[in-house]
Length: 591
Ligand code: ADP
Image 1: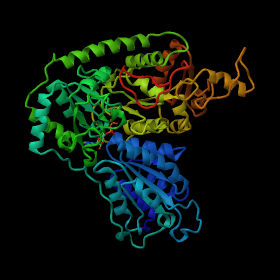
Image 2: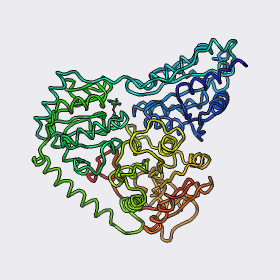
Image 3: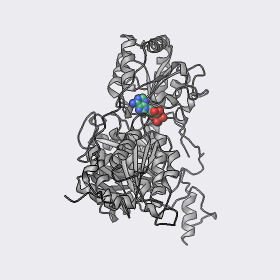
Image 4: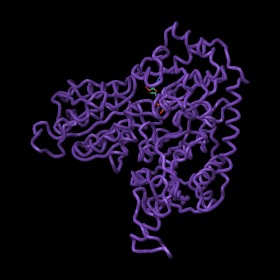
């Protein structure tokens, strides 16, 4: 038997850990690792930019509940890939980044793509290591993988110098094998604290359960549904906590969000941080007297902002919620309290306002009208209960306005710009979702199984960050359906942009005013659908509700990548606001 190379040992270690998919971009010296991995039966998905590959690997980690793997070259590859590290850390997604680097004997001599990646990445990762020898590779990869995953998930980094990748061990027997790592043990809460918290919930006048993406990641949907069904506690999902309990559940307060926040006096927070997404738990959005019970796997999170350490629980949501169900001992929250009445009145009012916006039938279409057509068409082809669609959504207006229009009935079927509000994640996330749900790997799934259509709702600005990944989708035959919601700009896409843009092109509009492009301007009516056509897919340019309905129907059934370029109204003169303002129908529209 020929003694193995470093590249083979690296690929074999990944295979032995149970890895079935690697996201990345090859080049010298990591191409040999990717080739060895493919020979061992691992799927390699090659991207067009490391940034998108990093985003994809982190989302794959979130969807499958185990670290996603990203492989890049050194130097610029690592620098591009850092975007994925930041995104993974801030979202608490598990990611293992492997990068090549220059030969160890050339360090500091100006070698090819030289970068001291360990020094650079140590502050940004849970663990950053360079294996000191070929023999140590399995152990280093295994430990870095485990540490990126156990506890609060984050990033692990392994630096792989070219001489190690190309090196050959003298005796294959000296190289130990990596072994699959079991799920982390789960911790619960001690009796006294559990009793105190159960009493506090029972005594609340206006209790609320907030369900975050930590509950989705923890696969705690079973116990969380039990808790709500047994207690009738009103709940509020965060944007990516949607689906842990179906949006259609009667206890869902999403469309009465402001009322829920203003009145809740005891708030059980399951896997969500009291950060900007939840307005830090602060007044005036929240009731100033609200008491927050945080349940989190990470001790550092307890007591943050309005959280009270005395009421915090460090533990796994799955275990803690089942303990809480026992401690509440068949207690349930009465169905006709003033809080429930206020929530119900706010829901009716807000849902009626949303319905009136959705039926606006002018052309160009409004966002709400376009989303309503897409949703209704998809609904008729695949009702939310079937769990047949994964939604990926980004772009300020697109993400905010679509959030309440597309119901989700199962966890981990909606990905968005997340805690970092990272625009540009969409296409990478879509590829990750396709690999997680439709690849031979389809690891770690729970809930309804089977193929899922990946549907992206992309603002035209957000799409542009990684539009070339449409080629990646085309190359791998991924039947992803992408809607580019095209208002010709960042945020409001002011229609003055059109005039200024045409002017720069040497074309003028009849009776046109002067003025240059604004910072929010993008090209006017850019033919984004042609990117799909150029990459072996199908494109649609749509302006009317009828065209949109037809393109949605055909695009859903299409076996190739499909881009539907949807012309929507530009929001001339509207106010621009930053940050996630609200959810449900009580949103402040970002303009
Ligand atoms: P959202 O964006 O939905 O508000 P965040 O990302 O802010 O959610 O919060 C998710 C939280 O869930 C993180 O603080 C993370 O530590 C926590 N978490 C992740 N897995 C678990 C788990 N198994 N049990 C408890 N908490 C978890």
